[in-house]
Length: 212
Image 1: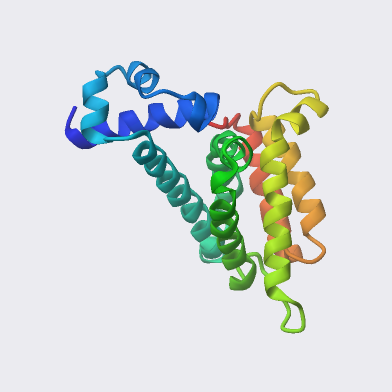
Image 2: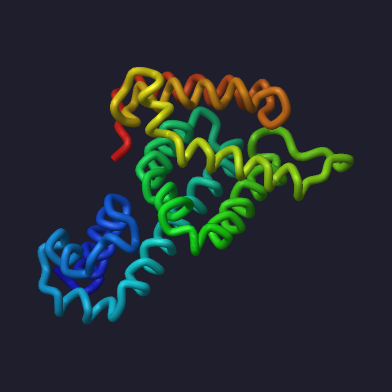
């Protein structure tokens, strides 16, 4: 395995350890064991736990930006499976985001600002078929929408439990996706776009997609 592969493997192990134990609870030794490499190898690529966390944060934000860009570009690719793939990507990141927002709240402000910008770009781009009207307070809409979406991220385990599931699998992602669409469609999603999202959610669930 080349150096980039080793670095990615360590980062992935750190992502899992931070998700499971929080930034304070995870140890560099535990990350090395999870990655199947020596402690020295971890320290060679990431001299501190802070650098490991920054690498994980950077990766998570990159994935979220890819999802955001896919949402914005969806009108250019009719019939695409965006909702399913987006559900997969975001579902896998949700526990890490919940940890970052709650367990280690020293970075909460940074995450809130980053995610508000991500959601805000989608809401102002027309990627969902509707943009925030000029007579609305766009900053307030963006901030409140981000807070609402992050609330689902934090409580997704409880939502799954309430709905009778143990995890965010394909069926649960479909049910939650439909519920989110119902709540958002009146103001934030055009009817045409909502129909496409419903079709893609149903296709994703029927194909047995999982949140890997």
